[in-house]
Amino acid sequence: MTLLQIMPQDAPDTLVLRTRDTARIAAVLKEHGIEYGQWELRATVTADTTQEEILAAYRTRVEELCERDGLVLVDVAQLHPAVGPEWEERAAKARAAFLEEHRHAEDEVRFFAHGTGCFYLHIEDEVYAVVCEAGDLLSVPAGTRHWFDMGPTPEFAAIRFFKEEDGWVGDFTGDAIAQSFPRLDVLLSEDR
Image (cartoon, rainbow, N blue to C red; front, side, top):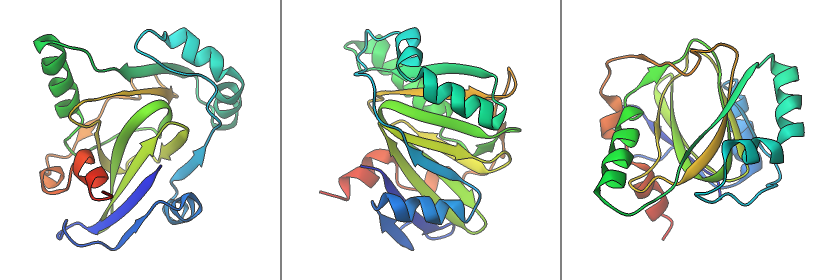
């Protein structure tokens, strides 16, 4: 289930809000121009599921969103656990690549068709950790400082939407703020 946890930027151990209420999550994020919604799951995604199969399952929703927001490029980013040192190295590199604060010149729009990931949105003087799970759609406005954690054992498939070919390229801020905040695995373990 989706999770929103808000913390002050200078006090990562202090909770301003922690909720799994999707209506409240949508309302709180909307106050900052962030779109959050949910789509019905239409496919079971495994390590063998291709990008084409995922896109075909969500074709109608993808086309509607592209038309509404002027999005022209769509692909699928996915990682599934495997066995062996090559997988562990690949997973660690993939995780590290997005754990630094950055922003994009266009909106970052993602639909999670499978698995889990956490967007950390640095908004004013707070950090909003948004744990997305299968069925979640998140649209982060251009210029929003953020980072992403896919966890120590990444498993997800996310449809990515862009207006430009290089829309995914991040402009890194150089701020080390991301190193102070709880990672995805810690956020999820706090429910136990």
